[in-house]
Each structure stands twice: as C-alpha cells, then as structure tokens.
Image: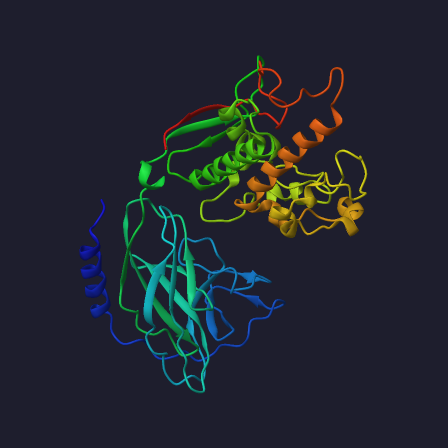
Length: 390
C-alpha cells in the first residue's frame, strides 16, 4: 500500500513526538582487541561506540560485523560512549536533489558542537535506518518509481544521537521519464541457429533508460558528422544510429550490471577487465592513438586523438601515443555520456580512413557514387532482438 506524502509526514511527526529524551552516554568498555576472545555478553568499545558480543568471537571487528538479533553478526551495537556532555543539536535544512525514478540525494546543514566532535549522521527512510554517513549528504538508491517517501536525519556524537530532523517528503519520478514506463527486454549475444540469447536487459523499471538514450544520442551525432563530412552520402540511418548501443552490447562485459544514477557504464568489479591496458573500455576503443591511414603513431591526421571534440578526455597526445598499450584505459571511456560519443567519432574516423585508403579497383566507392544495397562498413554490428516501449 502506498501512502500519500501528507499521511507519511503526519505519521513521522507522531512517531517523533512519542520518543522521549535520548539516553545518557554509556561508560566506555575496554577497547576492542583483535587477539582477545569475547564470549556472549562481553563488551568492547571502538571509536566511541560500545558493542556487545552475541556469542564467542575473536578477530571480528565489531564496527564492521554488527547487527541485531537474527542478523547472524557476532556483535550488537549498544550505544555511544564518551566524554561529550550531551547529544548534538538536531540537524536542519534537510533537502533532496537529483530525484529520479529510483534515487535521490539528501543534504543538510552540518552540525557542530563546541569541544565535542560530531562523528556522523543517522539517515532514516520511512522510520528505518538506511545509512550512517560521516558528512552532511547521502545518496539514496533502490527506490520505487512514483512512490512517496519520508526521510529524517539525526546527528551523532560520542554522547548520543540527536533528535531526528523535521521530516522531508520525497516522491520519486515515473520510470522512463515523460514517455511512460519502459517494458520488455533486449536480448543480445545471440547464437544464431545454435540457441537463445546469452544475455538480456530487462527494461521494466527503467534502470537502463538513461544508458540507452545516451547511446542513441551519440548515434544521432554519428549520423550528423557523417552527413557533414560527406554531403549527399546514402546510408541506412536507423541502422547507423542504433549501432553505437549495439556495439556496447556486443563488446562489453555484462552490461546488465549497469545501475541508473551511476555515471559509469561498468560499475561492477566483475567488469573492470575491459579497463585494463590496451582494452579500450566498454566499447573496446583500443586503437585511439594509431593513425589508421599511415598505420603508425606518426601524426598524420587520422588518429582518434586528432579530433578536438574528444581529445582532451582521452588523455593521450601524439607525443605519447606509442605508449597507449602499456597504460590502463582512460577512465573517461567508462563514462555513460563520453563513452558513446567517443565511439561515434571512432567509427567516423574509421570511415574517413577507409575513404582515403580504399580508392581504385575493389576499393571504397566515392560517397554518393551509387546506391548502397546494404549498410556500409562504418560501424561494428551486433545482432539484437528487442521489445521496447519508452
């Protein structure tokens, strides 16, 4: 059941008013030691926090291994201990920004206490603790589209936690923006004649919408620079516009790990092999310094790093082009906005090189010289079956 923001706010206010004054600070137990043995009920302190052992434990840091009953963790957090005389003031100015269908970013005014250090903040979503950031901001993810949430925040020092802030109501956006929710799936890495697709992107929920759109926009740019560079050339525009995203699906490792709200195409540690030396990132753009006409690193105008629009974010120049294969792939290649545009220019540069080198018998036909009977060789291809609704 979904509650309206006003209902949630009223419930949150009632809950806050029913909570009494914070308890006084605990006496600090002996500092936790990795070599000490703790049995059920034993206590230890770390960074001004008291923890109680749930059972026999040794060398399990309570700060990283604590939870309530049934959590399976060896420690339970009891509370704060310290010389701070009182809990800190209640945080003010809680606000949200960048709210999407599945995420939002909370910020508030930092709390200061004379002669005492605020160690962090407790962030609550609909009354449940969801994070303990050290600073005055927190990124919330995993939200449901078109749903109302109430957030509060409390400051924490070594004496105790403050009262919770005034509640903030946030309603997430619809999935897929103004065009309605996405649905269906994109199946890729097909084994033609041998079996079904090896991988799938489930579009329901809108997780991949912004990634798809950034690739489509790059595809439109690809078509634009082709038409600017070769006026009158004939080509299959739909095929070309979709080819950037098709290349990502074909060349990347596990594109389904992508998370909306993350600027990285490949956020998972399981995908980082594509960012290794000479790999070229999610689109495998691993030939961005060599001159495609000269076949060397000599500066002759047909290297990807010759294009002013993209060269600064590549991180290589003609002076150090020959060292590209010994260095990791530039981080910008993994950016969901820059990576697709880089790929558009990569294929345009490939087309220019073919036009220069392929003259003569059996060579590349002059642009516009005869109708194309099939899509030109101006991009990598990927056989993709899709069912989409944006």
